[in-house]
Length: 243
Ligand SMILES: Nc1ncnc2c1ncn2[C@@H]1O[C@H](COP(=O)(O)OP(=O)(O)OP(=O)(O)O)[C@@H](O)[C@H]1O
Image (cartoon, rainbow, N blue to C red; front, side):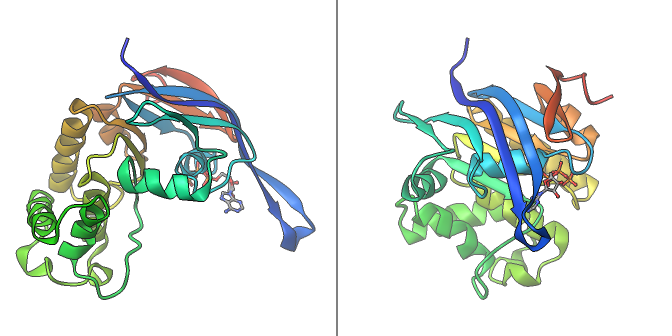
């Protein structure tokens, strides 16, 4: 059996809405699953089921309300991402854990090539090598050459998504979290992204992804779990939950 890199146990997240007299909304509750190296797990379920909440709790955009998110680092340590100090979370994001959603958040007036190179610089690469690798990735992602030195905040939705994905992938993370990363891609670019994600998986990255496009999901995932009203309603193989 391959190595488990992530074990989520009884994860819950509740939101307290102070503007509504402290009303509590459940984002997710009692969610448990594990992920092995080189495995691709899909999360399916209707809108509002809690899919993004689970991904954001793992990436620690949200601080979980309960449960554990046990991550095994490259060095073999076990870190509970539900409780780890901020600086540990930031270090792991820089070195081991990638995240891409459909929305690009970048510093204004940083050219596309430097948005990508910046990720490698944070891992200690020198500028020249980082930019060379960034250009390779821009080419792989089919970004038109005149845009490489332009600012991604002005890019089209699909171009921004490709930059977002490239930024998450360029550092070859051990754990990759994807929240609708192919939402506005054209069919040709979807094919490219599917090919890249398959390569990344082959190289041992564990991936958790939410896709409303079930065709893309079916072509990528090993396993799917389906959520309903914040809970895991079905855990199964690649066919279950996708039909
Ligand atoms: N920051 C937040 N504050 C308050 N409630 C939130 C917050 N984030 C999520 N929720 C609530 O948690 C529930 C689950 O939301 P979530 O975004 O995880 O669903 P989803 O399955 O990803 O939906 P979709 O497919 O529409 O993106 C929803 O009722 C949502 O309103």
